[in-house]
Length: 325
Ligand code: 5GP
Image (cartoon, rainbow, N blue to C red; front, side, top):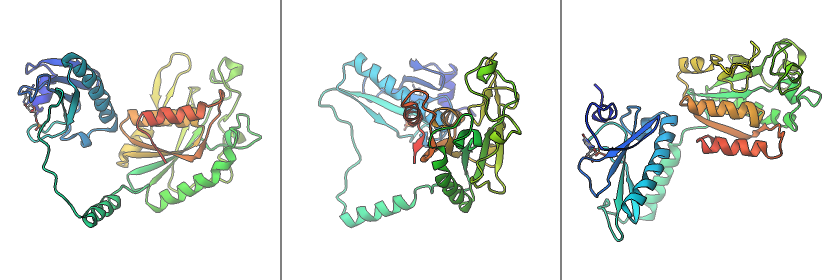
């Protein structure tokens, strides 16, 4: 049975709608605590906000800021109070309540607490942090191949050989925790519009079966890993999840998403090459597909066609909710 908020979003129940986008909808609360009291509601039905996919969660908070900004200007209030409560309607939502100057809302009664009780609570919360790897996490080792990682490779990424030790350390940690290890490879045909000589951008690299497409010899290729080859049909293969046809732009899946879903994996950790292309696109796709994502910053290196590309890529990933480790 759809929730009352889903029925409002679908227009089956009337509401005073103030905002909507692809993921989110906002309408006035039927019993406002203050004039302008608005509910910001994800289209995705989930009991609470922390049950949302990471993509829907991030979109909700983007919408919250947009709506709060409008409420502030529309009502001339001093500030907009944000409340997530959920006592009545089990469909994730955020209350935005404009408060006039000097205005207050009831707040749970504070209780003086001895420092040792606070310290004990800190220990409990820290102990409850999700470990770096677990069985629902996949380490994605992106394109640690000879053409990128060997100084003699055709598209050598400066400093790439320095990441082999930290990447191997991540692989060992992941395996110890029972996490899945995914290895991706650029795997191009000899002729593809991806290559500069055929009208594309890049020098010939990672041609399937050629030595340059092999993994770096020092990379620990673990048994039981998942192997993903990108660009095999001549596509641009930046993301480990999807490839794009260089001419008509059509996007197709590499199969990684299905393979991770099959294993009930909900988080990916990224390492490898290169920060500003394949790592970046894999991270953005991961978030778009609803995964939690993290990058091991000591285990990536950038092409830096323009100085600072790598740093900008990490910044973009962080803005999209990717954790920097
Ligand atoms: P909560 O679940 O966070 O405790 O509160 C749910 C909020 O939804 C309440 O403030 C309530 O007034 C509001 N609400 C419940 N039913 C409707 C409805 O049909 N339309 C609108 N606009 N708001 C509703």
